[in-house]
Image (cartoon, rainbow, N blue to C red; front, top):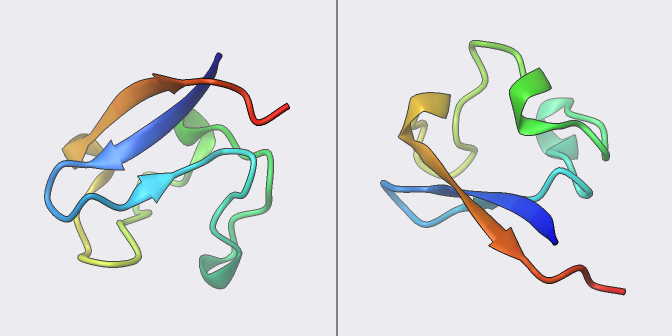
Length: 59
């Protein structure tokens, strides 16, 4: 199982395997390792506005 992080404000899904390259976050960056000032790229919500969800691996 992989962990994805869902923005409670807009539904954006942060997948650590993908990272957030548009905002300088490399693939394979764990959510816990994101900078404290990282925000949701869609709505600007803070990390505290995300919940974790277990999903099946893509493999």
